Length: 116
Image (cartoon, rainbow, N blue to C red; front, side, top):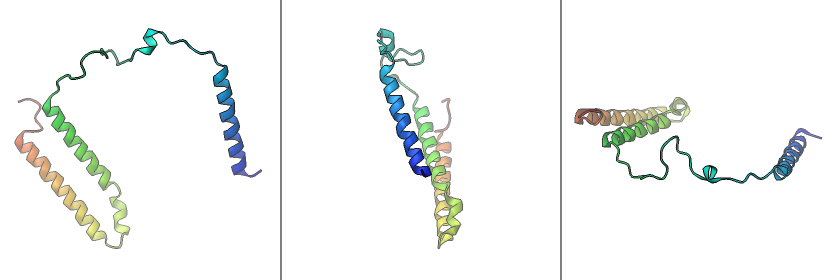
């Protein structure tokens, strides 16, 4: 047997054995505690509309923006292998400048301050 057919045989037999064993195991009868949601000590049946800080929301949006920026700039080292690497670096620098200007604007407006 070659390697692929051996792997397929092991996969199919292991899946079959696990499916058969799962039917032989006893069924657990869930009680009221197992059916209720667990929320790490918080009351899951309370109000879901709790107020939160608008400043926290703004900082979270800024975090998402900078997180996306990092995700967009991660493949940049491979940009020098493109036919026009200067164009790639120009657009990356433009994105960095725009995000830096936006961060400076938020800082000057006081959007990054926790206390008022």
